[in-house]
Every structure is written in structure tokens, then in C-alpha cells.
Length: 168
Image (cartoon, rainbow, N blue to C red; front, side, top):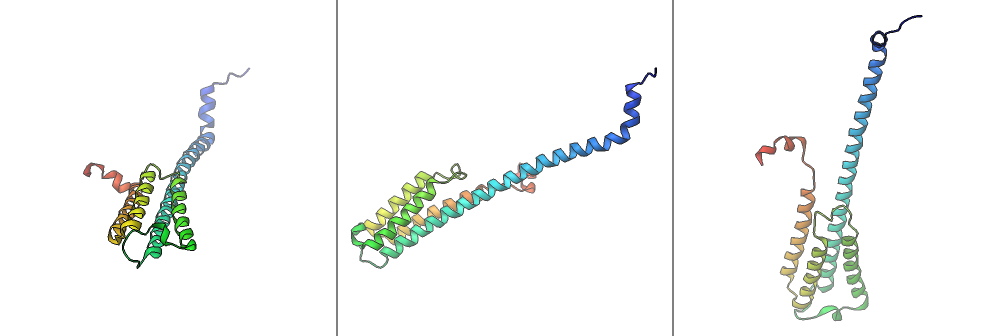
């Protein structure tokens, strides 16, 4: 009977199985890295979309309020001064903003959305009562800037920025 040494068999077949094994390991590693990168890209795209929708709803509400109460006489007016279609437009834009704020999934941690919605509601109430357009504009600008800055902060660092971590 032949006595087959495992080590000799291993050494003889090494040129055949070694490239196959290393190729399979490399393919698995590339798959893991690609899958991780695709997930990260999907999350970033989702965040970008949510920030755009939020900014769009805020801008729509701002323009609607300004167009409804534009060149009216200063003084307490409230919703009582609006006709039915104007009131419907106003409530539609505010409801849309509330819906957008409450349906965010990925940017909840980047912004305090409920506080933002409360501040916007207060801004609209003050504008209806006091008719101070410059204060209303500055409050809109503040919320808009907060949203844009949060979107910019949520961007991942580039490879060069990560390498220069000691300069921060």
C-alpha cells in the first residue's frame, strides 16, 4: 500500500488551489467593501433628499405667507382677514411643512425638527399680529441657514480630510 504524506500532497497541489483560494478571498473582501460603500451612498442620498424636501416645504410656507399678507396695512389681522381660498392655501402650506418635518427618517439627529416647526409657527403668528416683515424674513433666514448648515455637516469627510485629522 502507498503511504501518502499529506504535506507532500499539499505541496504538489499548491500551484492549483492557491490562486483559486486567494481569488475567492479577494472577491469576498471586495464584495464587503462595495456593499458598505453602496449603503453609505444610499444613506447620503436619502439625507440629501430629505434636506431638500424640508427646505422646499419651508420656502413654500414662507412664500405663501408673504404672498397672502403682502402689502396689507400693519396691525393685528390674523386668519380672519383671509378669504376662504387664501386660508386654504395658507393652511395647506403649513400642513405640508408639518408633514415633511414629521416624516423625516434620516435627518432627525441632524436637526431638532419639532423645535424648528414650533419656531416657524411662532414666527408666522408674530407676523400675522405685528406685520414685521424684516423680523419674519430674518426668522426664515435663520431656519433656512440651520437646515443648510446641518446638511453641510452631515457630509462625510474626504480621504484627505481624514488624513489631516491632527490639524483640527
